[in-house]
Image (tube, rainbow, N blue to C red; front, side, top):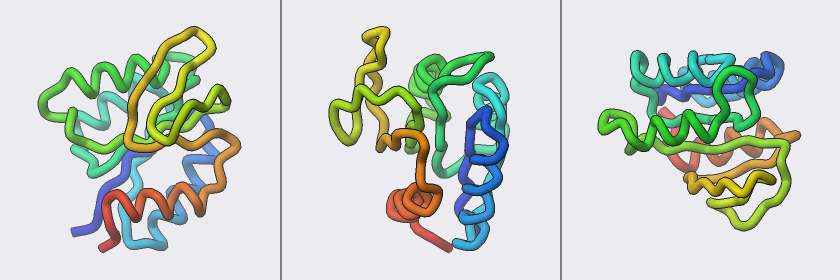
Length: 128
């Protein structure tokens, strides 16, 4: 069975580019174009990993990550955060301009190189 990767981002071009690269690795991408949709799909699809944008109009990545962490069914799913906010503090945590801090399995600043992101996904969940 192939690894299922949920991509939550309001940029359809990024979702499509990452999806195509994941498919080439034998993985199954699941697209969500906002935080609320991403949470719903995380609950219904039970992905192996979540790629999560932070700045989204309906529900930001901080809110989504907080809800994921509080849900016993979803809290063990690895999360890779994406953001255009660049106050980068380390490989797994950073502070947003508002002072919020979040710990994830990895962090990629935007613009992200899709191949580098997919390479990290493969490292975290393995290919099929």
